[in-house]
Length: 55
Image (spheres, rainbow, N blue to C red):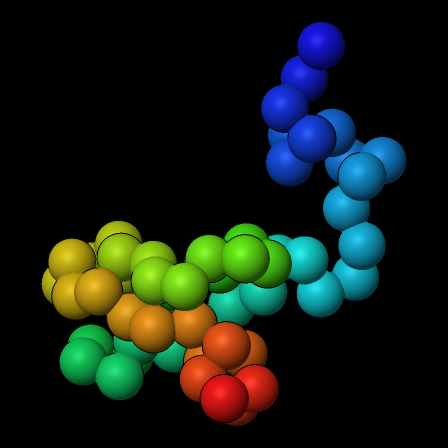
């Protein structure tokens, strides 16, 4: 059995999205439910912009 996030049948549009790192401009991938992601380039911790918008 796969983790629900690994099974493409369980994904909805918008569950995975990308945002630009405000520190270096690199692309950071977010999954729905992630509050923070780490930039793959500069390693900065980036807050989920979708979460920020809801507050």
